[in-house]
Length: 494
Image (tube, rainbow, N blue to C red):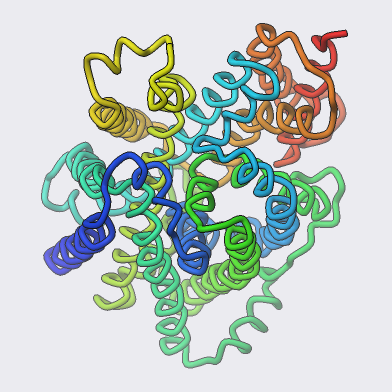
């Protein structure tokens, strides 16, 4: 089976390089890399954004999370839709009006250079950590089920994955990513659907019968009604809305694809279409989770556990897929590979874009004005600088993936949302203050406020259960943004 999986992996990778060649042959300069030459069809971006949003964590952690959290992930998805509406009506018009390449250039125009680089730095940290962990999950599964049996060390598949992503995004950047995302979305959804069908066939039941059985066992509960619980449904809805606003609307990776559309209207259609598709796809993955649990209970297949005997949600999907048949194992691996690529290719491009425009002043260099980095331009072309930065971030990806290996014990999805809550909160506060007030601030103090806010939130999240019995969930993002907003009020100019 390992050989079959390896062949499928190589075939899928070859297909990605074909897409890369087709998408970049008519333009592979900086304009194509950073902006996709403003020619991306909106419906292609909308479909591809599903794969970019899902990633390997959703692919495994959402189905696996049904074991502990039932269907309580759905209120968060409902909140996502509200967030997409806010992005379409508020943020996209702003970005298109300013004609920005990096969305954090807005902070420079509104507050100053320190604010711009503060926002860009928080994005770089958050996306580097978040996407590297998503990528880690894919490498982890392939290592456990393929490479480990061959005696190959963990770092080898990690290096292979990063090298492949670096190669196929090196020329075309976002112009290539827009098209490869469509391929990845297809395989992600296909893997989930095929596995559900295979389980239904194995158990000889229909989908309604499966859901009825899961409901009786308590696995389809959607709404957590305890207000003190971390997944209380109103907190989930509200948090989902702001998670989308921050992790999509204030995220260079996601917005860079939207800004590659031909016009504002096309980008808005793309975002609203994506929101509706996202509901459908997440329902499929939750049904997959119910099917996996039902299969284990009916067949006697043991749920995967760690050394302490605790069920590891991230391992449920791969364990069952590899147990059912070779076909489901191959389809699962293709889905995982697709998830891994979609987790990192757009992010690697976005990190490069953000660093080049918000720290190396590419917009000024391209206009040949007196930038503090003009000396770079005299020695290297912007194309060379961009490629060096791209390679540098790929190396950082690899370091994070390898370093996280000893710390992986439980589901990563909550860990990723914790990272987002602490790192995107200052961005939420900055943009809210900029959009909904007319005040200016003492720009040099903005980094201090942005650093203090997550520290305060971490202390509250750690000790609030002891003080009051209240457990923070994803709404820590809102508190973080509020503290940042209040901090900006304190340093406002008269």
